[in-house]
Image (cartoon, rainbow, N blue to C red; front, side):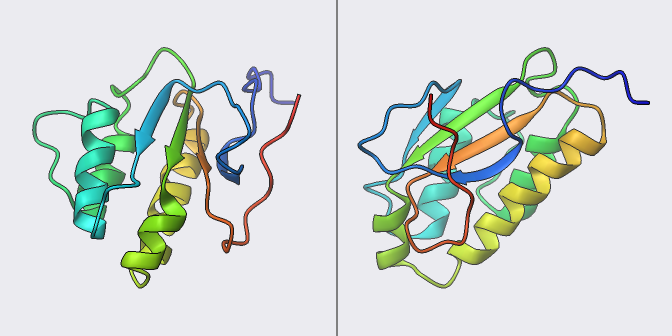
Length: 132
């Protein structure tokens, strides 16, 4: 039997439209990002990732799964503007989603503080964020 405490929220990627409120540790506004690289930079800035972070998917994964990043508390990241970004730069969105999901799962499997992303991405096949 696993005695590890469960996070107070579901780990992984979830969908919630912009009109719905959600409590989050971090808010990331991607609505003005033209390319995925801009979005990766915005994510790095908003999440206060280490100085060695570079705006690419490998670095994002490495930083999010680093045991020292947010090691003491679970984190919920609310991303706004994903639908607009997908319209401007559609191809890399799937890779970004895979990286974010893999990061959440790696943290959970590694026993690191839980991580979840709430996205306003209507076209993705994501579970809905639980509503109060």
